[in-house]
Every structure is written in C-alpha cells, then in structure tokens.
Length: 493
Image 1 (tube, rainbow, N blue to C red):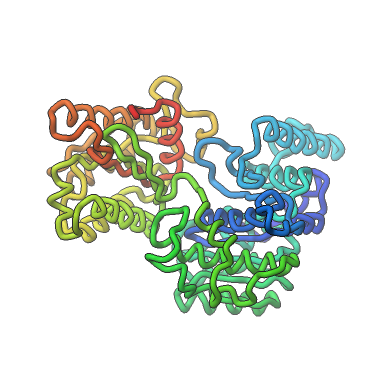
Image 2 (cartoon, rainbow, N blue to C red):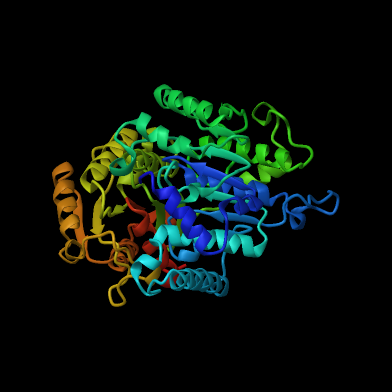
C-alpha cells in the first residue's frame, strides 16, 4: 500500500496488452468498504442479471443495454475461479485455465522483450494483482459490458483502482480492519476507501459514523463528484422484503446495492428506473434480484441428519458480533418464544467450530462469547467448543485452492493458535467441553459423531435437523474448507 501501487499495476496491465482506459468498455461498478463488500456486490450483480435479455419474460421488452455481467470478488471459499464470475456463474475450469495461461504467457513475453528472465519471480505480479489482471482480461475477452468489481483492501492504492471511469461507485459500512496498511482510525480508513470515487461517476455510501462520512464527503469534493448516503428504503428494513442473503445487517447492503444498481441502469439507458429509487416502490426486477442473491459462507445454513450447520466467516470484531447475533436469532427461532430460548436449547448440544490463524483470534473468540451471552441471557452459549486449523483433510491436507502462505506453518503444525484459544475458552466458560483438532475434516466428524450419540441415546428424534446446532465461524479460510468437506463428504440426509 504505497504511492507506487497504482503506477506499478498500470504497467502490469499494459504488459498483458491493455491501457487502463480500455477497461471503460466493461462499464465498471466499483465497490469498496470494510463490511459487506462481497454481499453488496452480489446483490448488485443479481439485480443487473434481471435485465439480461435471457431474463425477460415474453411479455417484456428485453433490455439490450446489458448482455454479460462480470462479478469479481475475493476471497474465494472453495475454488479460486469463484472470484471471477460471468452472469453470476464462476468461470469454468476450461475458461479459468485459458485466461490464466494467456495472462501468464503475456507477462513472460513482456519479460523477454525487456531482456529479463521470464522465470524470474519479478516477471509476475503477486497473487491478488495477477488474479485482478486475469479477471480484467477474461471480461474483456468475453465481451462483458457490466463489471461489478470489489476492491481487495482499501481503495486508493488497491490493485482494482486502475479503473479510469467507473459508471458508479459504492462504499459499504466502514470499520477498523487491516490497520497495518489502512491506519488505525475510522477516518484514515475512510480516506483509503474514498479513493475509488472518480469524476463523472456518482458515489453512494452506506450510513457511516459522522467522522467517517465527513472524510468521504471531502474525498468526493476532491474527486469532483457527488456522494449520496443510501438509507431508508421502507421495503428494505427488518421484516420487509425477504432477501436471498440471511441476516438483518444485509438490509443495509441491499439498500446500497439498490441505489448503485439503479444509477448504473439509468446511465446505461435502461427505461423505467425510478429517479429516486430509495423513495419509490422497488421495481419487480429489483425485488427478484434481491430475493435470488446467493453468496455462500455468509449467514449460510446447511442441514443434514440431526445436524444444522450455521456458517459465517466472521473475521473482524464487528463481523464476529454480527455472526453471533445471527446464530442467537437462529437458536431463539427454534423455541416457541424468546423467553424459552435457553430452556429449549439447553437440552441439545450446541457446538462452536472456530479458527482465526492470522488475526487476534483470542479477541474474536471473546467477542463471540460475549455477543451470544448477551443475546441469549446465558453464560453458556455452547456445550462444546472445537478449535481446529484451516487444514482441510486428515490425509490429503489442504485442498489446493485453499493453501495459504500467509500462515506460520510451524504454528499450524503445533496447533499453537488452537491451544491458546482452548485455554482462553476454558477460562471464559469452564463447563464447556473443549476440543483441539488438527483438521477441519476431524471437526466435522466430531460434530457428526455427537449427533449420532444423541440419536442412539434417544435424546433426539432421528429426523430432528436441529438436534445439534453447530456454528462455524472466525475465518473465511475455515469456512471454505468446511464447505468443501461437507460437500465432498456429505453427512446423512
């Protein structure tokens, strides 16, 4: 994160054959923020998909203003190709291979032309930059004409910020994260996120703390553009339109997505889009897009025999609290009334599967326990707590797409983080059964074994999906590996 980041990325872009201004053909929608970037981007892409020619009913005139939608997000959960979607479908393995090697070979050709050894590590950009270049190349090659691009980290110096002329920009809820590169205050972080705003492209933001909003407004003024706060649509509040993504906080993301998508469609000449969409009834296609949005691993629920899995990658203090509130709401929903939640749930096992290998894992675990205790009025949110690494399988190790070089291999092997978490949890709640396990697969097996014991003991009905409620949270790497395990080795239906 430095002033050379964008000039360097521009040079990489030229090496694969594109001037940054050529990316304007993608009609980019650029999204930054701390929380909800992926969800907001997914909502926008799903809304825009309703305006594809193939989505129009026979009675409607199809819009020819959009023919292909790109969606570039990070990180991936199971497969790297999830990051680069077209019309909300990840690139196929064949497409991913094609565009990977075309990007790779162009970089090697550029290195040779400069008299450099093409095998030299300096001849290729780092991981995120490479995938960003590859996404742009794939979208240009495939004729994408609406590209929703999510920033990686920050905004001003983010690899995606070589976009010269976005159609519209959006900034999701801000919080304290990535302090080593973005700063330790909400104002410093707002400065970075505001860096995606460009002249001639209206910017929208979710509601922010006043100090952050002041910074964003100043950045908009510096950039010569208008910034509007997206808030208050009556259909996008708790208890209103049912969204495709669970969690009350998603209404904030959906509101921002509606504002951004409407601006995009208006500027592309699509008819029938309300001028002030946040004050008028949502068009039918907007409602459908919001209802059909999908994004795995975010307040995601999966069921198998005697186990309900609740999955959310809460990897910051704010997002782990949101994950805790969501799980508490699911526990309460299984009882006749909120007042009976503790009694109804205390008869059944509730299991936490948690890991966070690279951040302040202890602070996250404490915040999760406190959130659940407050929501449930109980000092014992879980009966069992399992702390595992992000290693996927017992025998095969990491799934290839899930290998991370950002972790200390020795710490992983010695279960250092997990043992510290276990000690912390025993201090927080000595009554909980705590387990330290080396892989995600073994954590899943532990929960399934618990469910079988419950069934054999007669403590639960054999068809009761919520016999064991398990929350999987703390790391998107954990969530991705978990989803791979349960889909590769499914439990009993």
